[in-house]
Length: 104
Image (cartoon, rainbow, N blue to C red; front, side):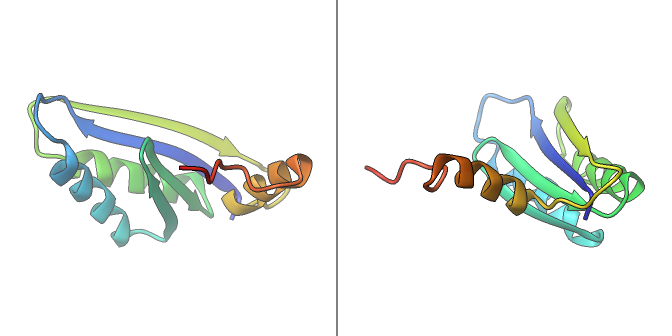
C-alpha cells in the first residue's frame, strides 16, 4: 500500500460525537482500505488515491449533522511502498524502544 492518510471526521456539536464518528468509521468498511482509529482520527491505507478519496468521502457523508468538520492529511509515496506500521517501526528503530509511553 502506498497511500497513507490521517482522516478526522466529526459533527460540529456540543454533545458526544462518538455515535456519529462511529458511522464515519463504519463507512470505511465498504472500501478496499485498511484503517485504525485512534483518539485523534483514523489512519487509512489504500492502494490508490482514488480509493482513499472515495473512502474519505463516504466517511464524511455518513455523519448526520447540520455541520461536519473533515480533515484529511495524505502521504502519497509514489516511488515505493510503505505501510503505516513500517513508518512507526522506522521511528521505533531510531528510538530504540516503542514510540509510546507505557507508564500510567
